[in-house]
Length: 507
Image (cartoon, rainbow, N blue to C red; front, side, top):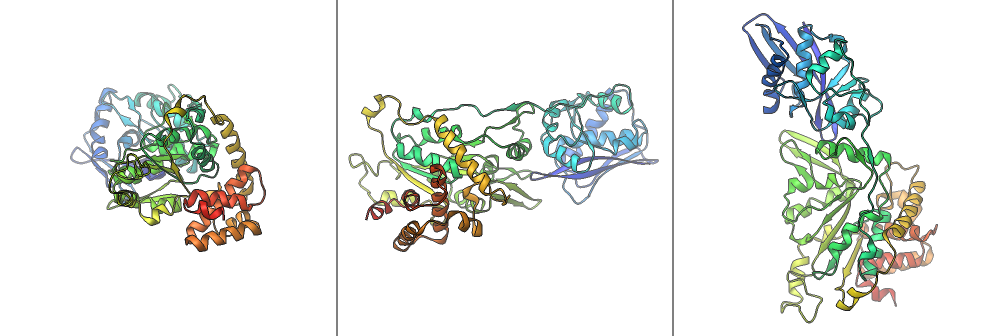
């Protein structure tokens, strides 16, 4: 008799169904596991054997063969323990085979038969729902998986409880979803003294999900401004929260099965490797750009990152997804993030300060900022200088709008974009608009078009730069509540992209 159970193998955020086949036949007693398992999966037979022994179930003196199909798909992780045990118990006619075949299972077994939580319960539940099967997972994963309402999730604490459920001795109650964590208040923009232009740039970046580069001397407030960005971003929509949580589930970052509506804010250190930033390593796990999906990726000391790491950001910024290709893995992760980068103007940091700048001006700054290649620099929609704050300004009372006030304007602008792009599901915010969609909604009036043409001719804007100015101008217009992009909207967008254009705009 061949009994079957089902589980999943992860390829990026996609969970592929794997059929676990178990055959018990006469022959030399053995326990063979085939189907391209990795080391963790190969060791499952010892954990299964010990767990069954703890339940006083002895394996027969026969040849036991477990096949993981499709056999050419790599199987990684300890979550194969539970489906292997279920298929074996079904082959021994301890569990009803027909009910086991209607279940997708995942979970790691302890030697005493208890179930250890594993990563990936949320995407596994999505796969089970598509196959119209229920999901069986460890109790600690039940609240996470139960967010997929299209399938029934059972979460036993041990293999013994699962056996009692399928034999009708003690039925399990379906798991309930975890709590929704609302976006916390966070830090307030009013804590930042001065820097009104930088605050305005943060507001525009948040409203249209534009990439932002801040350049300024040490201590000017760059690293203080960036962490306040999540406080002005709107909370994740239900669809975005599910997308983001699936990635965080694979990374093991979901807290007690709860789903957060706060947008991710990731700030890796500048010594992070390419695999840590883009994704990869053992099992091709998601990197920081994917963990920041629908949120913010803050990269402080931007020129200090290895050149190869910076250059790998170019394609994900454009496409909103990254393909991690390895010899034994080829996976795709979404990564629609807002890149916020901060940099000193030069190696010593005081290029713009005549009293403290080194003797290598301007070569010091050209060498340092030159580590950021032209194609990567061209992908920043907003580039601002953050000047130092005078000591006398630090004693002044709080000024400017609070984060709550700015967040209300950002939310209103985001709602305008949601209504505008309702018929274009691939476009969510102005930063996503391209082609005919961009032309139809962001084309400025005659004065704005003339100004943009003059700036493009004088400063040699690339085609990418031209379109990015249009997107930023559309966002500025949204913040003003204007239906048409006007000349002053274009002027503000250009001033954030080309510092040298400020004087030209005054002409």
